[in-house]
Image (cartoon, rainbow, N blue to C red; front, side, top):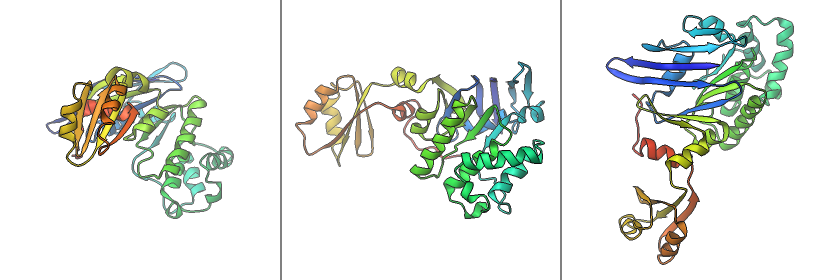
Length: 308
């Protein structure tokens, strides 16, 4: 239902998205992950018609199979889209119920339709008890759920979420995940960007890994783990032990990485490594299966990225 083909965008002398192509199927959740400055938000903005690509096209396929393009057909396309941005755009002067109701007016919903939709969406967002409260009286998690409820007022076929759970505590994040999973079960498609690898692994059918504006790889979370990383990881902790441990155990590990005072041993023979590490009780160890964060760090590096 969404096809991005050879998208290219440059700001000044800096390319931020380079020949990026991907598509989303109906009822699918696709995640875009990458470091700061990888081009995630610019990609979302091009999908929304807020930023025009220098090259390439964004094509939407309607419910009847008709093709429309951003930004030329933006008004028509946006009738079937829902958006939750990184920045809170709730109106502080209106109640929670009125934030949804007034937003619904932009889509031409009647009073009778809004009388049905607003209570349904407040219930979906677990905010019925806050219907008359203003956004300033809500917690961060409540504001994000209200933003989600507002984005659903037009019953969108595709929901675009830009880092929807940033800044939320674990309880609020899990409740947000439950709401998004419920939407997927109704057939709504979701395109999201996130920095949380557990979120990406939990919600997304497919993932697109971006770095420096380019697609590095694409696949299901499980496929990416199987294709790009060794199956087991042993972390060795302790001041001054990393160089010695790397020297002692390099022959048993497929790959080693050092970050601060932690040595990461990526291996297919964890039993032998753990037996050797047992001879060094002064070192702390953690043995775990490889995960999506390991893939992310291998493909994009461990260095800190500052946003431009």
